[in-house]
Structure formats: C-alpha cells, structure tokens
Length: 501
Image (cartoon, rainbow, N blue to C red; front, side):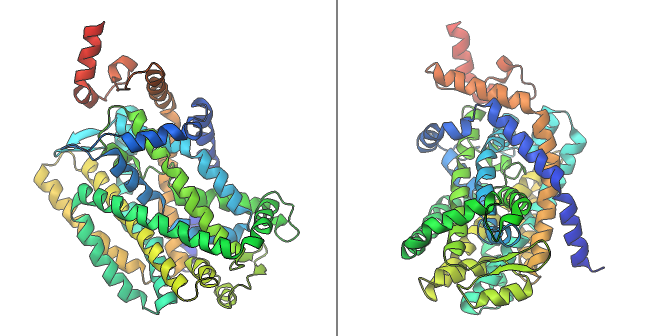
C-alpha cells in the first residue's frame, strides 16, 4: 500500500459521516438558540463592521480582523475545492455548499466570540484561541494542549499544502511556469509578510482581501453576462441535481450532500478553530460584537464559492465522476477537460478554462493571480494561527525564548510551503483535509460543551443593544470565570455602572 493510498484512506475515515453530523448538529443548535441571529442581523453586522473601533497598542481594529478572517475563509477551497465537490457530488453539491455555509455562520459566531471571551494579554498584545477557551472555559487542559499542537504544526505546515499546490498548477496551466519556480518566489514573499507579525499581516489583509474579492466577482459577472441565456438552465441543473430529480446526476444525492457539506466546511473553516486566534487579537468592548463581525465573513465566502461553481457549470467546464468510478459527464467547454478526466484531476484549471471561454488567454492568467491572492492571504493567516498556538504552548517560557521559537516558525513555514508545490494535487488535498478534520473533532466537541456560555454572552450583547446601550462585557456579572482581562478592558464602563446603581 502506497503512502498516498494510506493518506487518502485516513482522510476518508476522519471525514466520515460522524464528523459531518457533529458540525451540522452544533451549527443548527446555535442557529436555533440565537434565533438565526447571524443570518437575520446582517444590517447590524455591516454597521458594526463600518463603525467599529480602531486598533490599540495591544489589539488590531475590527475591520483588520474582519479582513484577516476573510483571508482564512476565502482560499483555494473556494475555487479548487468547489471543483472537487462538483466532480464527486455533481452540480447539486453547489446547493448544499450554500446551505451549509449559511448555517455554519452560527458556529463561526460561537468560536470567534469565545476567542474574545477568554483572550489574554501576552508580550504586549492580545492572544487567544481554542486552546484558551478549552482550558479556561472548560478546564480541559490536555485537550487544549492537543489543539495547540494542531494549531502549531498542522495549520501552518500542512493545511497550506492544497493552496500551494493549486498556485503551482494554475501558473503552470496559464503561463507554463514550473511549480518549483513559482514556489520559490511565493515562499520568499510569504516570509517577508509574516516576519512583521500580526500588524503587518492585518495591514496586508486589508489591502489584498478587497482587491482579490472584487476581481473575482467581476470576472464571474463578465462570464455570466456573456452566457446570460444559459443562466436559467444552470440554476435548474443545480436544483434538480441537489434533490435527485436530474436524469443524469440524480443518483448522486448522497454524494452531493456529503461533498457539499465537506467542501463548505473546508472553504469557510467554520468550526475548525482557525479564526478565533485572529478574533482574539481585536480591540472591542464586547465579545458578541467581534463574533457578529466575523460571522459576517461567511457571506463573502459563500459568494466566492458560488462564483466558482457558476463559472464552471455555465461554460460546461466540469467533469462528474459516478459512484462506480466511471465518468457520468465530461465537459465540452474545453478540450482540457478530457485530459483532466483521464488523470482524475479537479481544481483551478476548470475555472481557468471557464473564464478563457469568454476572455481567451487573459482569463486563465487572471484566475491564476486570483488564486495566488486567495491562497497567499490564507497561508499568512495560517501562519498567525500557528504563532498563536506556539504562544499558548510556550506561555511558561520567557519572552525572549518565545520570540526565538516564533522566528523558527517564520522560517519553517515558507520552506514547507515550497515543498507543497512539488507533490501531487490529491496528496496535498488529502493531507490538508486530514489536518482540518482533526481540528473539527477537537474544536467541535469543545463548542458543544461551551454552548451555554456562548448563548449567555450573545443574549447579553443583544439585550444591551435593545436597551439602547453601547454593549460592554462584564464577565463577573454573567458568572463567567477566568475572563478577568475584561475587568481591566472595560473598567470605566464597570465603574460607571456601579455609580449608577
């Protein structure tokens, strides 16, 4: 049995039905308890994002955090991952990706607000993450250490593999550049950005995230307008396939649901515990505020996923593999689709060919650069998750030792990122998904047990808002222990409340 076969079998075992049910159960429970607040309060979320406070000596601004969290969410999974979902689940997988992404906005709120609740002050900046709320919120220190190790090793070194591999694939397809060359150049730029720490990462994200998102949306609109007459039939194909009513793809209902959920989770990262560390770095008066702002990023993630799906479906640049291992459909939008089917490949090349049908040659290059921005910004965010995990694990060390360990990580990640340019796409995806799947198991269980505290904090925020107050967090008032930093952050509000009483 080859190493690749072992990796793929392990990936299948981790991403079996139980982990999907775990995530969906937790997401639905949070949705219901919050009365679908992360979906109903989109105007409030937008207002918070627009009028949120600024940064401080210890924390970054809510907008910087928002862009950094989008950097986590909008990645290669939103392009190549969507193509993988269509290949194994048919066009109907797009519908289930949409539904799953919207539902998981609630669990995104939960983990990001928890990142804020249990954040600490370390080395002159705010730090936090799942390891903090597992230890301080649940008293589960062993599990916190396990997640800290996953954050340190799996995220920056292995989860980024799929992004690196797809960047190499995209530039080889559009410009003929060998992956090794692209890998060296991107790895150097990666080091230059992450060497500046959280502030440089946040500043970079606020510049690159709006540009990359607008560029991708613009390309999609151009292709849809050029194929306007096919739009109704495309929507019909997605819906009929999603509910087993399509003559060709109807038999893939189970695969459509599984791969739709799996790719939605992979693309958004909700429930994996990736984003709480960045949420914890924000300066804000109440955890509920940052939770709502970061949950709003799901809308951007959904939009980019839909763009990728629409691009390949409307131009017939997609293949679908049946459960028996034979192809049910090989796209005729590009001759390359036959080659992709022969090698069992699905990824960014499909989207490049789709855009090329309307914007020849240039389209594929634009998609390659879009993917570069998506994957690069995500890898930078992955680095920060690794740094935060390291800061937690080395919290008993002196600051000088921690800084040396952090610099070692800053060197190791670009080297490993380069390595991923030179492996097979299936291996890169499988290793990435194994790491993410392990994180969901650990973080998902913690989120279920922390359910009462999350809802208590959410209700506190909304009740203050409805009373016409500027919400602020007083953990003692809510009976939440081990969140003492907030007594210092909001001491003026708390003292004023005492005087008023």
